[in-house]
Image (cartoon, helix red, strand yellow):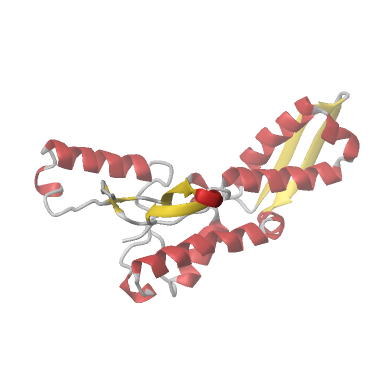
Length: 202
């Protein structure tokens, strides 16, 4: 069992790339206006979500700057081009989790997507390619996957799960290595990443 992730990579990074792209289109004077940037950020997020289901969206903002309206198309292909390095980065935690768990791709039965950005078609395609054509499970809402797991765990712990949960064993693990600072500012590891918790070290 293993878990992995990049705490510095998520939906906001994709939103930021869309914003940067449009800021270049609408000249540098707009980048100094916080209200304009706020409007642009909201539209970037909306565009990112829409591109999960559509191949093109139009980003439209009324009175973006000094009464000037803004309207530009954004294609899924352009979005993928703008974020290509971020998409490649998303596979790092997947590969690391597989390595930490000591599993081969052929041993994976289900690919469960967690987090809103896993709805992005390019992320799903990268996973499918990595797992040799295996489709990610789309039966669990990525925005609700963690809450769903917590609800299952709650029903197991309360004894109210019945037959549906009697054969399920959910283990929680430390997602990051935990340690303390020792002499010289060095971190001494106490609990390695992926240790089943609760645990005790002395």
